Length: 124
Image 1 (cartoon, rainbow, N blue to C red):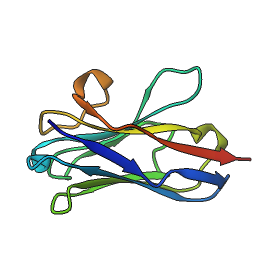
Image 2: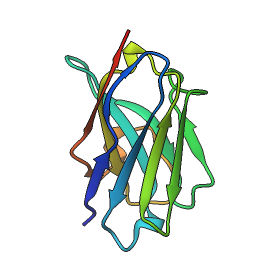
Image 3: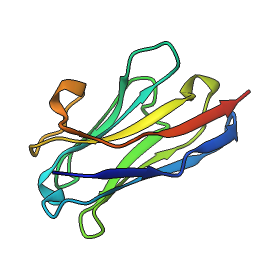
Image 4: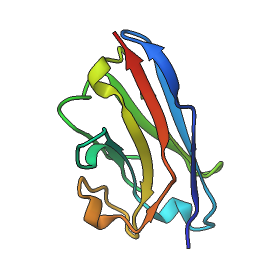
């Protein structure tokens, strides 16, 4: 069982930066690929970024590539999402997720554990 707790959400203006963090409870954290997803009101949950268990491989959605950076610290059992040049369309609840496996994935179906979500609101 893996428990995930997100932090760092908030209200910012377009062009600002924000950093989300996710703390994981599992001792086996270093064996889990991790991902960030988001869900805007009235829309389906969508992929944002993912990172392999050792942090060596990352993948981003086209809408955030070049602006967001995913990273992890396997000593502190945390995964972070640095978000720069935020846009109003980035407004959503952001979820941290963990999968049983080394390799990253863009699919929500591949993730077994989810955090409670953190609200990010970007005003224009």
